[in-house]
Image (cartoon, rainbow, N blue to C red; front, side, top):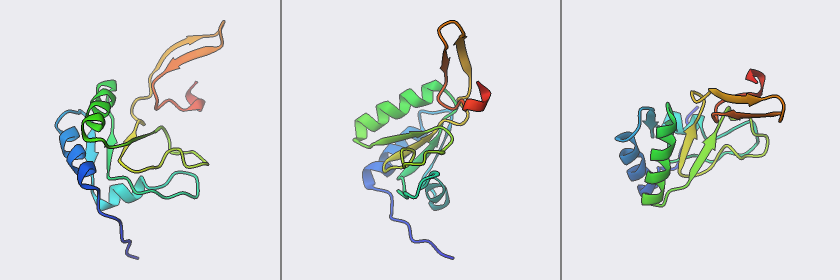
Length: 123
């Protein structure tokens, strides 16, 4: 089976190349990676221009700065389990799987501060 993907936008590709110079994580614009991140648990499919697999909160800050500079949208995803398409979109997809630290739990207030890759089962 062959899949025809749209080419990354010129701004998206330029942003991805710039981002790769500023992050500890991995930035990819390969067709396979873009295809894998084009869907979540919903019926929607939107192929991103590139994917950042973030390794630190600094990677997220760098992504925001680069996206702002190049005018490229960001789509942030945790586990890609959205049933309504919130984890897919154009621009740069950011995978937060590795940002999975529980920073603080306050049982009295029934609240927690977590990084974006924390899944409910971990809490």
